Image (cartoon, rainbow, N blue to C red; front, top):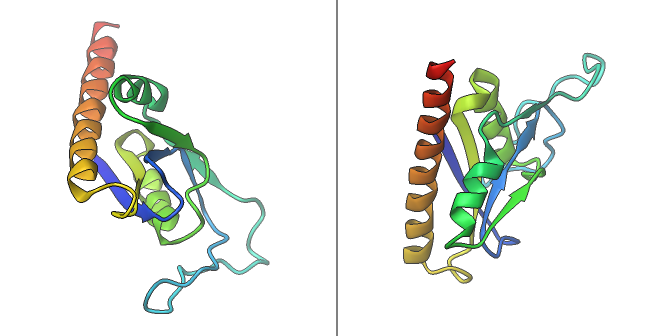
Length: 135
C-alpha cells in the first residue's frame, strides 16, 4: 500500500484524490522542472486512472470523527504525476491525500488524521479481502 501525501494551500481538511491523469503537467516544481511531457503528436486520448480502493467507504468511516473531502482533481502538478505512476502499477494499492497547510491545521492534527486514514484504509482492505476470500 502506498499513500502519497501532499500539502495544498486550498485544502481546509484532508482531501482524498480519486484519479490521476497521464499528461497535461505544465507547472514546474521547486527545482524548475516539469514531469516529462508526451509529444502532443503521440497523444491520442487523455488517460486517467481511477483509484481502485473504496474511497466512499473510507470517507464514511473517517467522516464520523473528522472532516474529509473527496476530489477528482489532484492539480496536475508533481502530486498528481507521482500518484498516476503508483496507480499505473496497482490502482488497488495507491491513495493520495492532500492535507492543509500547517497554518490551517496544526501538525499534530494532520499527524493524527493521517494515522486514522492509514488505519481506516487498512481496515477497508482487510474487509474487502475477507469478502473476496469467502467467494
